[in-house]
Image 1 (cartoon, one colour):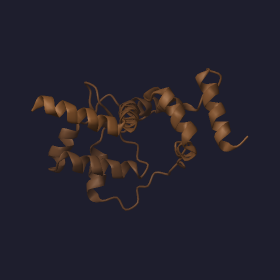
Image 2 (tube, one colour; image 1 turned 180 degrees about the vertical axis):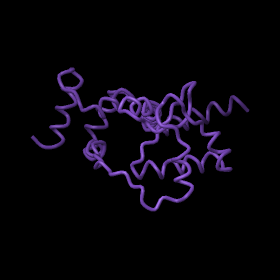
Image 3 (cartoon, helix red, strand yellow; image 1 turned 90 degrees about the horizontal axis):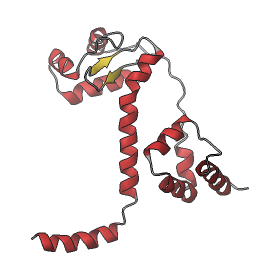
Image 4 (tube, one colour; image 1 turned 90 degrees about the vertical axis):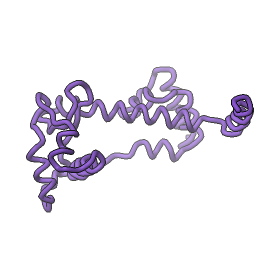
Length: 174
């Protein structure tokens, strides 16, 4: 059985409920239309392999932190009981949203666990427990699911049909 046949068989087993992908794949499938995904997996062997990228665990790196990075880490609360809204960081560092997000992203890339709540208690914090880490990751996972769904919708658009219909509709609107 070659790679393509194996993948088609796995998709069929999944659709019948007899096989479960790992958690990463299950989340992606929840965010996507399974039929479109099955078609994508069956038609594009490389795509399947690219979705299984595994990142090596990274050690936290506090070396050569810029003073502003140290200041930010000192400001961020430990634990989810009290969070620090981005707007407060903007005022404290006298900068705009994108700059704060960029600084936080750079810290995360050093394996410094900074997460955020997006609900009523919105804001950044450093998790103390695995449960708090998971709580803080929910918003990111929801954003990824929404983005993956939108990618699937856009990728499945028949552009010729769209432009034909759009041209007809524009005539009616003008």
